[in-house]
Length: 150
Image 1 (cartoon, rainbow, N blue to C red):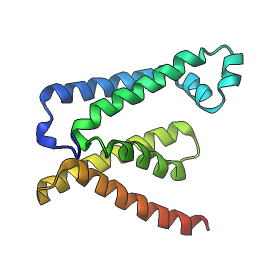
Image 2: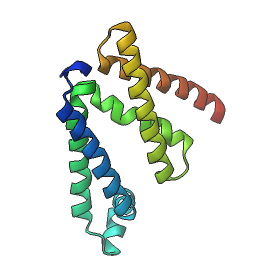
Image 3: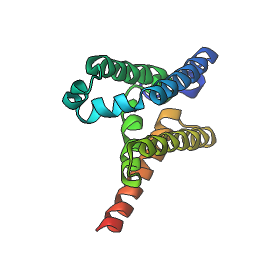
Image 4: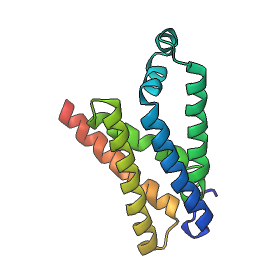
């Protein structure tokens, strides 16, 4: 659980991750405006009639379930990096929150697939390989984006 191990992932874990993915996508599609309102200005959202406490707790529960779903694959220590690096990169590429979410999800998928191939070919732990790929992309993007903007 510390660094993640792809061989420890059972069929049940895969089904759980797939269910979480489909469920989260449905919740986000159905309540996208409410999540945006709560995330950026909860007081204004409350004035507009959005139940901010409910959507805040839904968001926290979704984050917790995401951590639980990915802990076996990437490990306890590396979950936070996988949850923060793709959105950081997507933030520099997107101008709207919806496109940022899609780009971030695509980066996460690419990091996982490339990291799993790397772990298989080099006989490394899957979590470390995934985060290695994500970290390299983070540093390359940071250097490129800084030069591009500056």
